[in-house]
Image (cartoon, rainbow, N blue to C red; front, top):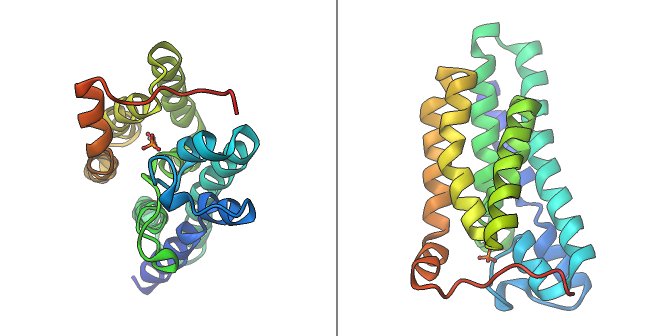
Length: 201
Ligand code: G3P
């Protein structure tokens, strides 16, 4: 059980690595006070452009992937096989929370979408790709990244439940957190005031 706690702490601090904030600093910009103020790919694209956004996305996804893979590895060494999924859930939730509420940056991070996607890729790449396809289609059609994120959040528990019903409660919790973090986006979408994605920068 201690190993679950150690995994949670390591994954949480992996989640604290915020490329949006760090890359912003390289550009001399405080991403938390520009654009939507969110430390995530969409806002980096809005404020700093495509290259910085691609790097942000990659790092946010990879930290989710690595945190869960590390958890899987540790579970294989130290835990009974039936505890494996719990290690995945603990590490996945911890890296996701570390990204959204990073202690290293005053508990103000991103909205969790890219990191949750990385977590899902590490649980099962096929499911990750299914989730990615949903986001790509919704964003391509609507041009609202936030709408893609909201639809992906709703799909997340259904997808993980299909994979293994053990993950349902965990998936619901992750989805609720993403939806909660998008409350401002959702009200902007409803009012027709949400900003559309643009790759001009
Ligand atoms: O995942 C974040 C995205 O859905 C919205 O980002 O910066 O427009 O609030 P933003």
